[in-house]
Each structure stands twice: as C-alpha cells, then as structure tokens.
Amino acid sequence: MFVDVGFACIFRRYGVIGMVKTYLNFIDGKWVRSSSGKTFDNMNPATGELIARFQAGTREDVKKAVKSAKNAFPAWRETPATERADILLRSSLILEKRKEELSRLMTMENGKILSEARGDVQEAIDMFQYMAGEGRRLFGETTKSELRNKFCMSVRDPIGVVGMITPWNFPMAIPAWKIAPALVCGNTIVFKPASDTPLSVMKLAEILDEAGLPKGVLNVVTGSGGVVGKEIVENQGIQHLSFTGSTEVGREVYVGGAKKLNSVELEMGGKNPQIVLKDADLDLAVQGALWGAFGTSGQRCTATSRIIVEKPVLKKFTEKFLRKTRGIRTGNGLKKGITMGPIINGGQMTKILGYIETGKKEGAKLLLGGRRLSGKEHKRGNFISPTVFGKVTKSMTIAQEEIFGPVTCIMEAKDFMDAVNIANSVDYGLSWSIYTRDVNKAFKAMELAESGIFYVNAPTIGAEVHLPFGGVKGTGNGGREAGTTGIDEFSEIKSVFVDYSGGLQRAQIDNK
Ligand code: NAD
Image (cartoon, rainbow, N blue to C red):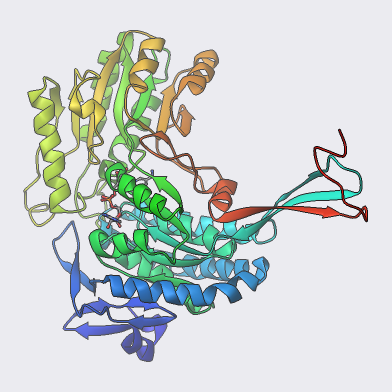
C-alpha cells in the first residue's frame, strides 16, 4: 500500500502498530506526533473494521502549525503565481495516477460507493487543474480615473494564514475546493479534516509534498472539533476561516472569527427541494429524485430531501419512484452491484432513525424503508434502508430540518406557485431543482428560488468546479466557493492609484 513512497518514508511518516497504521500530523513539512501522545481510531462504516489511527491533536499542535504557516508565508507570497500553479498541476497528475487507489481508500473510510468515491477524487483533480489555470489569471480590474493623468487598477494579494475546517461527506473534494484556490492565491494553510475521514486529506498532503510544495505552506492537524477546530477558530495568527459543515457549528465558527475580525466563509446545511410539475417527463424526474435523494446515502448538503409534486401527477410519480427505490442495493460500496453505502457513524445513524420516528409521530406516511438493516451483509455496519415518506406537510420536522441520511419526503403541491412557496418554506437555501417542459415556469422558478444553486430537469446534486458553489439563508453567509468566487474568497483586493500629472490632484474637489 505504501510501496509508492518507499520504506524510509513510511517510517518517517507512519509508525506501525501491528497491522494498523498510525498517521502523523503534517507540520512544517514533517510528519510529527501530537503533543497529546494520543490517537483516535478511524473505522470503516460498512464493516466496522479499524482502518487506521490518527493523532488526537492539541491546541499546542495547532499553535505549532500556525507558526510554521506564518514562517512560510513571506516566501510563498513572493513565489510567482505561475510557479504556485505548477505545483497544483503536478499534484493533479499524481492524483490522476493514484485515482483508483485513493478512491478505494475513500470508500473504506467514508462508505460512499466506489463510483462516487471516484467522482470525489475526480472533483479534486478538476479543482486542482482549474486553479492551476488561475495562476495565469488572478485578474484584477483596470478602470479610468475621474482625474486627468492618473491610472487606476485593483490587484489581488493573499490574505495570509488561513484556517480550514471540513466535514466528512466529501473527504477529498471539499478540502481540494479550499486548498487549491488558497494556494494559488499565495496563502499558507492550517487544516483540520473531519475525524471520520482524515485519511483522504493526509493523502492530499502527501501528494502536494511530493509535487514540491515548500515546507510549512500546508499544515494538517487531526483531532476533535472542540480542541483542534476551536484553536483554529480562536488563534490570533490566522486571518481567514474557511468552514464547511453544519449550520450549528458554522454559527460558532462565525462568532469566533468575528471576535478577531477574520473574514469567515461558511458552507453549511441544506434542505433541498425537487419540484415536479404536471408537464414534467416523469421518468426523468424519478431518475433525478433517486440520485438526488439516495446518492451518498443522502449524506450530501445538496441531497434532495423534499420532492414537491403537482397534484395531478402525484400518484403516478410516487408509484414510479417507490418502484425504483426498491431496486437500490445497500451494502459495502467496494462490492459490485451495491448502489448505496452506509451511514458514516453510529451517532449519525441514531439521529436519522430519530427523525424517522418523529416523521411517523407527526403524521407523515412511511411509504418505504424506515429501519436499520441488520442482515448478514449489514450487521457490522451502519445501514439504513432507503426511506420515503408521503403526506408530508411543510410544518413537519422532517420537512424543515436537515436529516442528512437516506430519507426523502414527498409533498403535494396544488399548483406551480404553491410548489415554489413550499420549496422556499425552510431556513436553508442551497440547491433547488425543477422538472418541467414549460420554459416560462422554469425561468420564473429560477427567479423566485431562495437558493445559491438552481437546476432545471436535473437533480439537486451535481456541482461543477468552475461555477460558484454556496447558498443563502441558513446555508451560508454570503460567500461562494469554487469558480472565480473561490479566488475571491482567498484574496484581498488592493486598489491602486498612480498619479502621473506631476502635481497634487484632489479627487472630488479639484475636478468639480
Ligand atoms: P460538523 O459541523 O459536525 O463538523 C464539521 C467540522 O467542524 C468537523 O471537522 C468538526 O470536527 C468541526 N467542528 C466541530 N465542532 C467544532 C467547533 N466547536 N469549532 C470548530 N470546529 C468544529 O458537520 P459534519 O457532520 O462533519 O458534516 C455534515 C454537515 O456539513 C451537514 O450539515 C452538511 O449539510 C454540511 N455540508 C455542507 C456543505 C456545503 O458546501 N454547504 C458541503 C458538505 C457538507
């Protein structure tokens, strides 16, 4: 498994306890143990097997990482953006070469089925290549001055040391969305991965190191949110915070960042609707809903957790949807024929089962699933059968709160405007989808959707790296990742005025 990095590197990077590897933190270009002397376990959610051990990081570890990132910053910001971009490009080529191995490891640590894990790694490759291109752009603006013989432009500067905290559902794609733009812009990084999926980030760090990233530019500290995450949020040496995770924790990160006047980018929860109008291609809408609701076992911020169907086609859509949902095969994502993987951990499984009970109690009709799977293939893992509720109304808890599991709600709409109102009746605003053949309604819905992402005749999931990604209301705080907006997140804009008149010219005074 580690043949590609050689034995010497293995002993430098990992200690080996029996058959299980212990990964170290990556600080100042070295693989080091945590000052706690403690580790935590990373389990396979499909089999219950121990995959590896990781450092239980401390505040002290984060402080060292910040110091290292601070020291590396002056030289990194001076490095031409094209050279920074070359490292991203080289990393993307290594990722491509190792895609299959990395995807398999991801399926083991996260549970998502292999084809989806390949998509996750591909998204990292795409983002690295896209941001490598930015090394030759990083555009500012030029414009005219209101005064004669004066030149105006804006240029981009890096922010400094940036802190990153990520969730477990896209173990490599989400870190890549943050790391690639931050690096090309000239920032240095202190990174904390989710404790359920630290392995993919360790691999990313290993690859960037191999591609020639100077020491101290990227530092990775594993450990709990309450310790490592909190220190990243509070550390005075960090100038910008980039967080993806739940709205609950995001709010804390925002408040912590505000106290030290950091810019804070938040990408948080969703409660995404797919509207199906009466003129829709129902088979296509069923395919979209199936992928949107049960892809990654519904553990996506963009998952379709509400399917809002116009009354005349409700019965037909529901029948077709249930038929297809029955065909989902749940199990270990490394096995052929499996189309849905496990839930990430026991706590999350209990939470999802709790929501299912609440749904039943509040009067929703359980149409399918709704239970933990415990047969031979499932008993060691965290599996919940694909679950569909009917007769869901917008005030119910399951129609309002993010469940983050394989549970979707079918809701009836009287007409187009009723569907739009139901879709907007939540505190989140990430992704929206509408299935219709009526172009007027599609555009009207686009105008009315309270969301950062909008799809026509496509499911609520399916982001592409060159477009902005993020949401409104409880999903975000105004920023967007990916696309050119990813560059905005990680750069400071400086306005530059050059007066070549040879005299003092006073704006707003001398020319009026
Ligand atoms: P989470 O909020 O529990 O954890 C996210 C990260 O924050 C983890 O690394 C965690 O260790 C850390 N953390 C926890 N407490 C902290 C604290 N007090 N201070 C600092 N850091 C802390 O989320 P999760 O369960 O890992 O992920 C699921 C959530 O992520 C869902 O709500 C999902 O919608 C959201 N998500 C959003 C997007 C998006 O782009 N909008 C993408 C993926 C996931």
